[in-house]
Image (cartoon, rainbow, N blue to C red):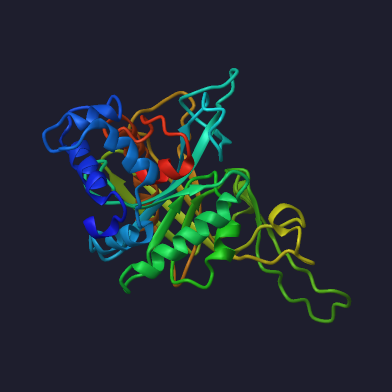
Length: 345
C-alpha cells in the first residue's frame, strides 16, 4: 500500500496507522495524538490537501487480496457523504439519505460514492470492500456503476463469472445491456408489480410486421405465470421454508424515453425472472414483504440457491457503511473539496 502513495506518502501512511490505532475518531487532529503518528497535526490536513494517492493501484491491490472462492459475489450500492452546510464546497449534489433530512425530506447535499464489496456466506456481517468511486453531480449512476464493474472485472483473476448484486434503485435492464459483453452475472431486485413479456410465438401465414412481444407475465397476477423453468425448495434457520422459481426468456416493454431516448427502436432485453417466497422473516414486521422478485442476467443458467442467498447477504454492505462512518470516521472530516474526500476515502 505504501507504494500506492505519492507526494506526502509518509504523512498519509501514518494517517492510516493512526486511524487503525485510535480508539475513536472524533476529528482529524485527534489522529495526530497516537504514538504511531510522529508528525504534528498540520501534516494531517496537508496530507489530504496536497497528497497523492494512486487510486488505480490501490484498486488493483485490493482486487488481488480478495478472498478466493468458487463463486465470487459482490454487492454494489451508493452511500452519501453529507455536506449540507458546506455551501462553498464544489461538486455537491442532492441525494437520498435514509438517516438525515433537509426541510423534512430525506434529501441531503453532499458527495455520492459508489461502493463495491465482496460478500461472504459466514454468520457475520463483514465484507471485503474492493472499490469506491465518487459519482459526480449530474452523472448517470447506472453508467458510472457499469464502468466501475467493468474495471473491477478486468482486475480479478480469471475463473467463475462473478456475480454483482444490486438493490431496486438500479435499472437492471440498462445494466444488462452495458455489461452484456462481460463474463459477469447481474442480480437485481425488481418491483413486485413489474410486467414482462415472453417471446412471440410464430404465426404461419400472418402478414404485416411480426409482433415483438408475446404472452404477458404479471408479477402480481399468478394466473399469468406459466410453469417455471426451475424450482428450488430449501429450509433455512432464519427464513424457514424457502421456495424459489424462475422463468427464462422474459423481457420488459421499453419505451423510447430516458435511457432509450436515442434509440430508433428500444431493444429487446430478455433474461430470467426469479421469485423467492419465504415462510417467515427473521424479524417480522407489520409491513414486511415475504415475496421477493429478482432479475438475473448472465452466462449459463442461474443457480437458484446461490441467487436468493446472495441477495440476502447484500444487506451486509449496509453494515459496512455504518462501520466506515461510525468506527473509521469516513464522513467525519470536514474537508472542502471533493478531491480531498477522494483521498480520505
